[in-house]
Length: 444
Ligand SMILES: [Mn+2]
Image (cartoon, rainbow, N blue to C red; front, side, top):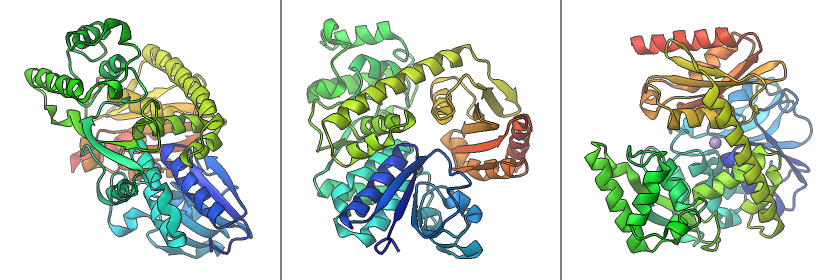
């Protein structure tokens, strides 16, 4: 289907994993000399799921919407929880091949990202796709697949090892705080979490004294990055941090683990670290220019990087504004659901980012479902997160699908990160329903 497509329509999700997936599909389409276009979506619209004579390739999305598709011919490479457990779907005039780790008994929220799935499928169409095997690494860490074990596992790991053997990705054992190449070392330590040190977390003065005590010049605290430090210095700081964690009675083992670097980036690059790279391409998409992120994924430099940096700083501004709104907002509790409804005051494409912030940086009970809402036309856009521990017991994507379905909406996602869209006016009922379903879970 793909190889013979007269017109290939590539659809991808709007996060880093989706953009990395789109870039893989674009790489394949270009090498095959296909006529193609790319559409990046937060959520597929009703028009997107009605096919025609073109061939469709849905990446990092589509599995939760298969039953709504009509007359679509093509391929779905996704890792979100599927509604149809078949590889070939031919109902409603469709002719769709679905590739999804859940169909293979793997957990798509940790074992195989959307970009890994797209890549694996891509290898069957075009063997040269290994030239972009760094992209599944970027997509997988963008989706936090390395979070639970401090490294990528299962199929994500297989592709990472391929990228390593191709010489595009370098694997290191290092601190796992975010921002190794994109933030100053003082910022990185100040907001480093998992684990948070009580001594340093969000305490800029203590961080500065700590770094100065390790011989770092006070004047360079705001400019020098983690990856600029000598290896000896980094080891010294890590062992000191581990000591602090131990004295605070915390488990220091999660402080370090695998990190991934792009060998294609110079050391001075702020996106040398794969997680930093993924946050940059995520920003291009959230700011409405996913094509810039796709160009970066395919090794384009110069203008693309300059434009991306501007979009990144705009995105950080949006997040700062959102943080301010969040600081003043009161979450409301309904049983185990803690929800924030920002109405029109929050950009509706960062509800998920804000939900992640709340669960990461605020003190919330580990049994909570964190829900963030914003208006999206006549609908309410809803994103939610639960802790990894809670996600062992409950699959939030199934719960959201069930809760949204009866209210004229849609829902889905992953075990620990899910989303829904319901008509405005139904959001309170939605919250009540989620709480009821959670109580059923807790009762078992
Ligand atoms: Mn994904």
